[in-house]
Image (cartoon, rainbow, N blue to C red):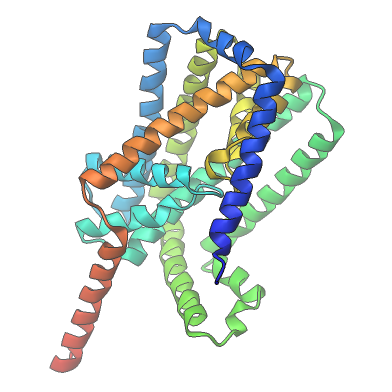
Amino acid sequence: MKINWRNFFTIFFLVIGLAAMYVIVKGYGLRAIINVYKNFNPTTLLLYIIAVTCIFIVLTWRWDVILRSREIKVPFLRLFYYRIIGTAINFFTPGPRVGGEPTQAALLGEHGAEFTKALSTVMIDKIIDTTTSGLLFIIGAILVMLHYVVPIGLKIFLIVGAILFVTIVGIFYYRMLTNRHFFLRLFQISGLNRIKNQTIIKLEHKIEEIELIMIDFYKNDKKAFMVSMAISIFSWAVMFAEYKLATTLLGLHLGYVELFFIISFIGMAVLFPIPMAVGVLEAGQVSAFAIIGISGSAAVALAFLVRIKDLAWGVIGMILLAIFGFSPAKIVEKKYQEKRTIIERKKRTGE
């Protein structure tokens, strides 16, 4: 019987995550964690929900700017739905939250957007988001190291990680702005292009096609690029408001340096190949809270609040997917069938 390794590793890491969560919750006590929620205030909760919704609106705005620069026009409310659907798929998918992006691109096919072009806009959006998030994380890490005693191992990890990130981002944008491929070059360096396999050959051509569109954006749509970067920075301001309200809900009054650190650890948790970052999110928050001198029970309570928020958006996204009857696979197949029909028609007419 053939083993589905992807499902095997997903279940394997999920079991590890659940075990880690059990140990953490047992260690701090469920009663102590629940007691943190006694500080809940209805008004603060309402403001928190508004802030969380505003994050999605701002991120949809950034995507809309990129789409319009590529001459793809989609009603904003629909884009908002697509963003939620993509986020929902990302939440339930193990890994660094990238599973929903192809779905978002496929959904744009409902509005006449060719899949490859649509996917390039989603990749541009994701890269801009990663760039600003990474740079702000580095700033936050520096501030934390200046204000708190950070374990030497973690300090080395943060410094090395920051250097690698800045180097990779710098090379990426340099190559984009000088009409050179980045992802295709990595593909070639890996030696995959030497494999004479039809699937690999098609993948290489697809990477080249998508990256050419991205190069054109960075080189010729600098205004849209700068606006998108500004929106990303603004989204972090809204995110600070979100987590300020979240910690206030739990009776914690933290400064911006501490919030920087907490948000960064939440971002790092989703990079692990565990569905919903089970266990990793809790462990990350416990570590962050230990450094800034706050009890672990409050850390787990915050992790649970973040998990409930993500789960709520995940459920909403799945409901939207069902209500609108979206089938990304069928949309993509339909667009490629239309493309093949046009090519065949041109061949018959000799155009």
